[in-house]
Picture 1 (tube, rainbow, N blue to C red):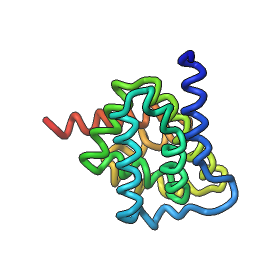
Picture 2: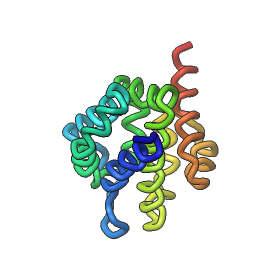
Picture 3: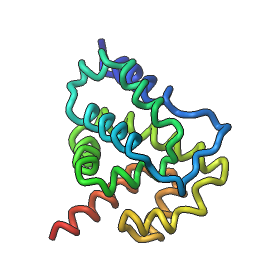
Length: 164
């Protein structure tokens, strides 16, 4: 099986977990403990599993993604940026697992775009950036440009700078 076919299978598994345009995901609700556990389980699986295991466990990934369909994408990113264990797995995916990252980023981008269409992102950018420790201008620029890659790179860079 070629890597293009493999990535399509995994992309389908993750993007099928995205909610339809209808519905509302409240940002101020945050993540409950169960959602935090699900997010951590998902990023741990994506970071630690072989490509073969990710493909053979497609239905499990879909299930994990579906369990998070009600979570606002800014809450998801905020948790990934602020929880030590989740941040470690998330940044590992971004830096070391480019194929998995591309698929995960596409899923995040779709989720964020859905909320932007419902005008459910812009009012929260300032608070979001403050909570994750990046400048509002930088966060707003990347969010408005649909640039998940550079948004996450800024989050990772912030993490590295705080280690000094």
